[in-house]
Length: 427
Image (cartoon, rainbow, N blue to C red; front, side):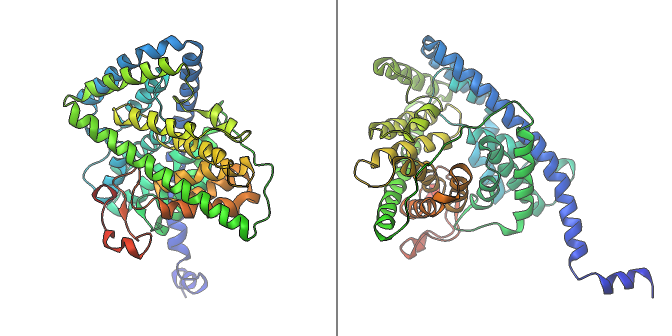
């Protein structure tokens, strides 16, 4: 009996192909994770520098229109083929056309830092995902990968970017599996997605960065009254996610109709935001807003915080400034949850934590990833409350979302059945 036959008899069918598949993706994900994680770390350090400089020199906000003009001109003349941002990655996943240009990564990094430096209200997740997706897609060309492998590679880029920017590898891995199709999970990519998230998270921590820590000190037992209150809070968070998504799309459409020359859109937007900050006399609702998020876990905040953050962020992004939506969504949810303590008898920190991830769930249609993120950030003790809030918010945000290129794979309930197969921007 030759060696090949003996191996075939003694090794269960599927082991060898699985080992080859695993080995291939360990190598690819290690490279993608190292590069995307390092890019996220550099980005986080740049954001910290920009935020500190702005807060120490508030007069710099007067130059937001100039920063907007620079961003507008750069994207109009050098970045037209990467201007769609996160939606471009989703679009290439569903309808492949060409490799995402690598210039997407430096352009979005620099323009997001400019947005934050001069006082725009934006986040960081979109930048990390675009950097991760653009970096990962280059290996499609280098290794001449087939179409199915390219889809997996794009998923690893999203996973790596998300995991490393927030320090949440489980949430990052599942987010990348969940985000492309509403109501469907990409199990064919599960190993690469988890590998990329872990590698990227570890790579980011090789750099001198830190992630903000939050605490939910008291979690009550879950009985019928608490369940009802958690469901009510989840409904509020879902409606807030819907409001955030619709406001962002509204301002984007508004600026496109009002100003035909794209570079002038962020100029006008910058003028309005700079005047608004001057009139209000505070930078509370611009930038990332992390200090306010921390505050929301410690004390009950007014409802104006979440509403003004939605207004400032949707206006900033709609005008053409660059940055992500997720940290502003965290701000929106945490401050709304804190404010809901006025009439929902649950601990303030618990409501803030539930809102932190639930509004994000409603706006991105990724309830499982958001539940895992809540557990990673706040601990398993609050996991049931977080899960209830995230899934309820997912349902009540309807077929809306910040990513218009998401395809509806499974309607959220039978009343939405006719929307199956559509993109969110078509609904």
